[in-house]
Image 1 (spheres, rainbow, N blue to C red):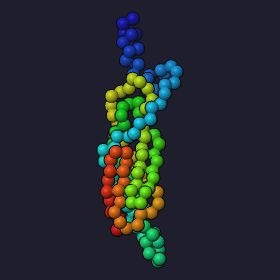
Image 2 (image 1 turned 90 degrees about the horizontal axis):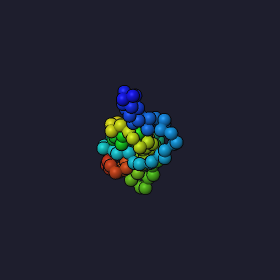
Image 3 (image 1 turned 90 degrees about the vertical axis):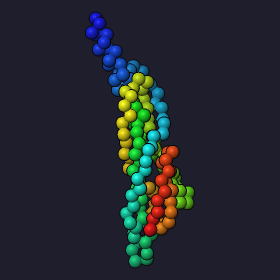
Image 4 (image 1 turned 135 degrees about the vertical axis):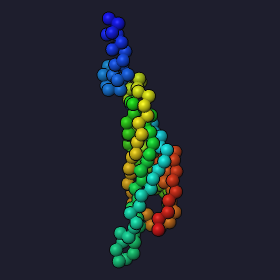
Length: 133
Protein backbone atom coordinates (compact mmCIF):
# COMPACT_ATOMS: atom_id res chain seq x y z
CA UNK A 1 0.00 0.00 0.00
CA UNK A 2 2.82 2.38 0.89
CA UNK A 3 4.55 1.80 -2.49
CA UNK A 4 1.32 2.49 -4.37
CA UNK A 5 0.85 5.76 -2.48
CA UNK A 6 4.42 6.81 -3.29
CA UNK A 7 3.89 6.12 -6.99
CA UNK A 8 0.64 8.09 -6.94
CA UNK A 9 2.27 11.08 -5.22
CA UNK A 10 5.21 11.02 -7.64
CA UNK A 11 2.82 11.05 -10.62
CA UNK A 12 0.79 14.07 -9.47
CA UNK A 13 3.14 16.78 -10.82
CA UNK A 14 3.23 15.07 -14.20
CA UNK A 15 -0.53 14.67 -14.29
CA UNK A 16 -1.10 18.36 -13.57
CA UNK A 17 0.89 19.38 -16.65
CA UNK A 18 -0.25 16.65 -18.97
CA UNK A 19 -3.99 17.12 -18.81
CA UNK A 20 -4.80 14.14 -16.58
CA UNK A 21 -5.77 16.33 -13.64
CA UNK A 22 -9.50 15.92 -14.06
CA UNK A 23 -11.50 18.94 -15.22
CA UNK A 24 -9.67 21.34 -17.51
CA UNK A 25 -7.79 24.02 -15.62
CA UNK A 26 -7.75 27.60 -16.85
CA UNK A 27 -4.90 28.73 -19.04
CA UNK A 28 -2.98 31.72 -17.69
CA UNK A 29 -1.40 34.06 -20.25
CA UNK A 30 1.86 35.73 -19.20
CA UNK A 31 4.74 37.46 -20.95
CA UNK A 32 7.85 35.51 -21.95
CA UNK A 33 10.84 36.40 -19.77
CA UNK A 34 13.26 37.81 -22.39
CA UNK A 35 16.93 38.10 -21.41
CA UNK A 36 18.40 39.24 -24.73
CA UNK A 37 17.44 40.12 -28.29
CA UNK A 38 19.56 39.48 -31.37
CA UNK A 39 18.92 41.55 -34.52
CA UNK A 40 19.56 40.09 -37.97
CA UNK A 41 19.38 42.12 -41.20
CA UNK A 42 19.61 41.05 -44.81
CA UNK A 43 21.76 43.98 -45.95
CA UNK A 44 19.02 45.76 -47.90
CA UNK A 45 18.88 46.54 -51.58
CA UNK A 46 15.46 45.11 -52.50
CA UNK A 47 14.57 48.18 -54.55
CA UNK A 48 16.51 47.25 -57.69
CA UNK A 49 17.66 50.04 -60.03
CA UNK A 50 15.47 52.66 -58.33
CA UNK A 51 17.52 52.41 -55.14
CA UNK A 52 17.20 50.34 -52.00
CA UNK A 53 13.68 50.17 -50.58
CA UNK A 54 15.06 49.03 -47.26
CA UNK A 55 16.21 46.01 -45.34
CA UNK A 56 14.29 43.13 -43.92
CA UNK A 57 14.89 42.57 -40.22
CA UNK A 58 14.46 39.52 -38.02
CA UNK A 59 15.05 39.13 -34.31
CA UNK A 60 15.74 36.23 -32.03
CA UNK A 61 14.27 36.62 -28.56
CA UNK A 62 16.24 34.61 -25.98
CA UNK A 63 14.68 33.87 -22.65
CA UNK A 64 13.08 31.28 -20.42
CA UNK A 65 9.68 29.71 -19.99
CA UNK A 66 8.40 30.05 -16.45
CA UNK A 67 8.17 26.34 -15.62
CA UNK A 68 7.31 22.91 -16.99
CA UNK A 69 3.63 23.84 -17.49
CA UNK A 70 4.45 26.81 -19.76
CA UNK A 71 4.59 26.93 -23.55
CA UNK A 72 5.06 29.73 -26.07
CA UNK A 73 1.87 31.62 -26.80
CA UNK A 74 1.02 34.33 -29.31
CA UNK A 75 3.39 36.83 -30.91
CA UNK A 76 2.23 40.29 -31.93
CA UNK A 77 4.06 43.36 -33.16
CA UNK A 78 3.44 47.01 -33.87
CA UNK A 79 5.56 49.78 -35.29
CA UNK A 80 5.51 53.49 -34.53
CA UNK A 81 8.16 55.36 -36.49
CA UNK A 82 11.54 53.82 -35.65
CA UNK A 83 10.28 51.85 -32.65
CA UNK A 84 9.04 48.28 -33.07
CA UNK A 85 7.24 46.63 -30.17
CA UNK A 86 7.05 42.84 -30.11
CA UNK A 87 4.98 41.04 -27.51
CA UNK A 88 5.56 37.31 -26.92
CA UNK A 89 3.21 35.58 -24.54
CA UNK A 90 3.46 32.33 -22.61
CA UNK A 91 0.49 30.08 -21.98
CA UNK A 92 0.61 28.38 -18.59
CA UNK A 93 -1.69 25.52 -17.80
CA UNK A 94 -1.62 23.56 -14.57
CA UNK A 95 -1.03 24.20 -10.91
CA UNK A 96 1.66 21.71 -9.93
CA UNK A 97 4.58 21.93 -12.36
CA UNK A 98 8.23 21.05 -12.61
CA UNK A 99 10.45 23.88 -11.44
CA UNK A 100 12.60 23.67 -14.57
CA UNK A 101 12.59 26.90 -16.61
CA UNK A 102 13.37 25.74 -20.17
CA UNK A 103 15.41 28.15 -22.32
CA UNK A 104 13.78 29.57 -25.46
CA UNK A 105 15.26 31.15 -28.60
CA UNK A 106 12.29 32.37 -30.63
CA UNK A 107 12.78 33.95 -34.09
CA UNK A 108 10.43 36.70 -35.28
CA UNK A 109 10.46 38.34 -38.72
CA UNK A 110 9.62 42.02 -38.30
CA UNK A 111 6.93 43.39 -40.60
CA UNK A 112 7.85 45.72 -43.44
CA UNK A 113 11.13 47.09 -44.73
CA UNK A 114 13.56 49.24 -42.76
CA UNK A 115 15.16 52.27 -44.45
CA UNK A 116 18.64 53.38 -43.32
CA UNK A 117 18.51 54.81 -39.82
CA UNK A 118 18.50 54.05 -36.11
CA UNK A 119 15.80 51.80 -34.64
CA UNK A 120 14.68 50.33 -31.34
CA UNK A 121 13.00 46.97 -30.94
CA UNK A 122 11.24 46.28 -27.63
CA UNK A 123 10.50 42.65 -26.87
CA UNK A 124 8.38 42.49 -23.73
CA UNK A 125 10.61 44.25 -21.16
CA UNK A 126 13.87 44.05 -23.12
CA UNK A 127 15.05 46.73 -25.53
CA UNK A 128 17.65 46.49 -28.30
CA UNK A 129 18.91 49.35 -30.47
CA UNK A 130 20.12 48.72 -34.01
CA UNK A 131 21.16 50.62 -37.10
CA UNK A 132 20.38 49.99 -40.76
CA UNK A 133 22.76 51.19 -43.39
